[in-house]
Length: 307
Image (cartoon, rainbow, N blue to C red; front, side):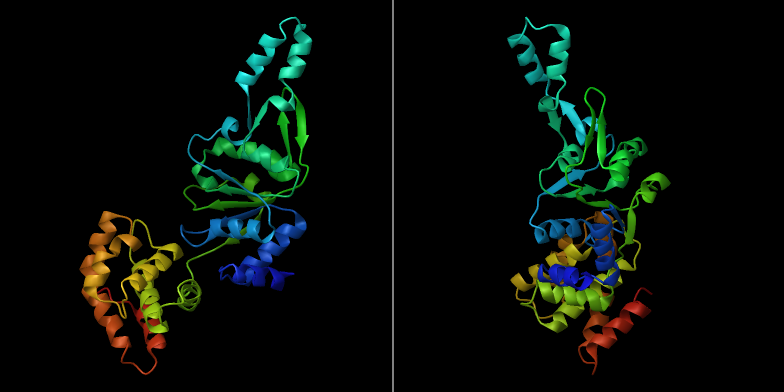
C-alpha cells in the first residue's frame, strides 16, 4: 500500500520520501488526522491537494488566521432563512417555531461541519493551524478525537464519513499537546540537493540537468543565509520556468537580477542576495569546468561562499 501511495504521488508530480508515504498510509488506515510541520514552501499543503486528486474526492479547506472562531470554522445559523420562516409561520406556537428554526436545514455549514457531514469521504485540510488563536484549538479537539460536532440547539452531529484529515503548521507558535496527541506527526524540511534536482527535472523537463543543478545550487546557498523568507520548492520551480522562458543556458548575473522577485519575496532579502550575487555566480560557473559538476555543486553548498 505504501508503494502504491508513492507511485500515485509521483504520477502527480510529487517527489517525497518514505516518511511521507508511510505517514499517509498510516493516517488513512488508522483514520487519524496527520499534522504536518515544516518551513513554508516545502509542499505540506500540496499533499492534501494530491490526496484529494488520488481519491477523486472533494478537498475541503479551512484556511486558519488570527481571530478565527467557531462561526467561521464549524457552523453558523442562516438568520435570514430563519426570519423568513418565522414571518411565514407566525401562528405556530413558540416551541414549534424553535424546533424548526434550530434544525439542521437552517445551519450554514462551514468547512469542519461540511467535512464530517459529507455524503462521500472528503479530504479536510486545516491549513496553517498555527496562525489561529490557541482558543481555536479547543474547537478542533472534539472533531479530531470523536469525529463529531456538538451544536447546543440540536445536539451531536456525528461524521457520516471520517474525512482524510491533514493539518499543516509553519511553527509560528507552539501547538497544544492536546492537539498533537490526536494526530499522527510528520516533519518535512527543505529537500536535499539531489531531491530538489529530481523535483525540478520532473516539473521543468525543458531545461537541461546542468542548469537545473545550478538553480538548485544557488537556492541551497541562499537558504543557508539568514533571510526573512527562504525560498521554497515552489519558488525554485517558478524560477526554473522563468529561466526557460528566457532561453537561459546558465545562471548569469544580469538574468538573475531581473528575476530576483520570483525567488525572494522581501526587499531586505533581495538586497542581501545582490551583495553576494557576484560570488555565488562566480563559484557556480567554476563547477561547469569540473569533471563532476554535480558533485562540485554539492561541495560548494556544504562549504558555502559567504566570506
